[in-house]
Amino acid sequence: MKKIIFSLHALNKIQILNKHQIFLDKSFIENIISMPDRIEKGYKSRLIAQGGLDDEHVLHVIYEESENELKVITIYPGRRSRYEKD
Image 1 (cartoon, helix red, strand yellow):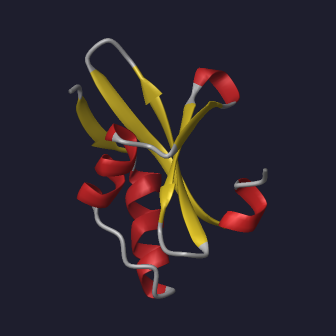
Image 2 (tube, rainbow, N blue to C red; image 1 turned 90 degrees about the vertical axis):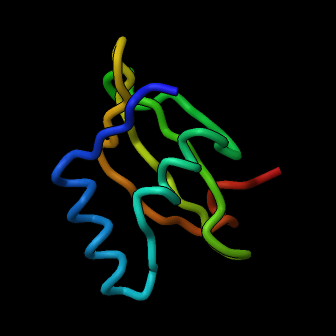
Image 3 (cartoon, rainbow, N blue to C red; image 1 turned 135 degrees about the vertical axis):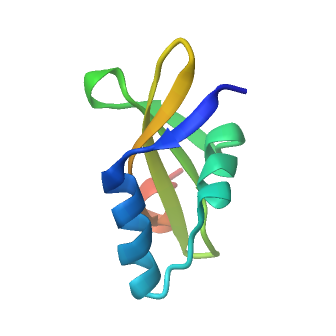
């Protein structure tokens, strides 16, 4: 597995979400990257890994992949009903 680094923005988002009672840490985010429920291509060749937060919510992890590392750009939660349609 490539080394995973976090942008300052991603680290700030973790703190903001924690203040809103969405408790995350780096290892949780790393697990979503390692074993995503879904992965999609995003803007500027970035990848979006999606993993479950709880029964009603998912977490999206936007990251860039280079030869030696994965860089987490940002994270954001979303409702399963919006992102997991039939």
